[in-house]
Amino acid sequence: MKIKTPAISLLFASVMASSASVIATEPVQPISPVKEINLAQVELGKKLFFDPRLSKSGFISCNSCHNLSMGGTDNLKTSIGHKWQQGPINSPTVLNSSLNIAQFWDGRAADLKAQAGGPIANPGEMASTHTLALDVLQSIPAYTTEFKQVFGSDKINIEQVTQAIAEFEKTLVTPNSRFDQWLLGNKNAITKQELAGYNLFKQVGCTACHNGEALGGNSFQKMGLVKAYKTSNKAEGLSGVTGKDADRFKFKVPTLRNVEMTYPYFHDGEAATLTDAVDVMGKLQLGKQFSKTENAQIVAFLKTLTGDQPSFLMPILPASVDETPRPAPFE
Ligand code: HEC
Ligand code: HEC
Image (cartoon, rainbow, N blue to C red):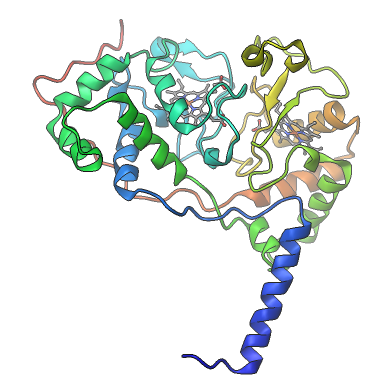
């Protein structure tokens, strides 16, 4: 149909204009759904993300520490690695991680592809080697066939593995949160208390660091800007990557998307609740002591940031064959 009635086009124009102006003036933008994705790579990457045979034990997959049923985290202070090793740092969510300027708390991996090879061979995480992981995959005919279909070569290499996982991770965005609905013009999508929390969040300056689509992920900032942060955790943040003393204790600002699901908080996992995390942020980053009411308002706002969680059929992994190297969970 070519001709719109004037009433409808006017209404449409005004809705567009008002939502566009809201977006332009707010420090937070709605999450866009994924576009331009290689679906064949995504399907393969999804299997790999869930496949524990990429670990030495045959027991730990990416999903063990980035559980997609739990906001892309393990909800532990620090993760559990091979042979129940205590991990050094809190596991960040993989949800919306494609929006990060770099990966890891200290940004040492440039992007998702560069990140994905790390955990497989990290002795404290999956404790395999790239050679062993590739031998496992190469031994399984259904995998070699699928890799060939997707990448066109007979031999599986680590580049292909990390590329497929990264492509899958790009699909893990969480649009359509109540707050995004509000940003897009639905004024009834959030309550008065939640709106008061957002206004306070902006007014006191949380948005200096938590802004953009992900409310974070786009800069490195000092933890303990106004008042020092005390922790027994040994991580020093960005200085480990740049070697600059000025970067000590600068961490990648975590996203606040889905933050109600990604407890406990901070790189050391020491804040058990959102109430604690907001209290610490107010005091240490802004020199501000929130009243109980103010804290509750901000927490209520943060809970509006939970978006549509990834939803797909559980991947069924191809079975190992006689030649597949066996898992070694206790070595
Ligand atoms: C044993 C637990 C564990 C396993 C298994 C694991 N990770 Fe992680 N992951 C972590 C921890 C802990 C960090 C943070 C490390 C750091 O910043 O130094 C992390 C960081 C990440 C990040 C960076 C997110 C961000 O915001 O910086 C991504 C992406 C990621 N992992 C994806 C994966 C993928 C893909 C796999 C499987 C190949 C995987 N992880 C396996 C624990 C794990
Ligand atoms: C100067 C920059 C800055 C400001 C201002 C700031 N934050 Fe943060 N925020 C950070 C950094 C950096 C971290 C990670 C610190 C760490 O893990 O050690 C963080 C972590 C958090 C976390 C924990 C997220 C997670 O997954 O671990 C929450 C919640 C949070 N901030 C909320 C707020 C609120 C609410 C405000 C305003 C009262 C605020 N922040 C102000 C930089 C900032």
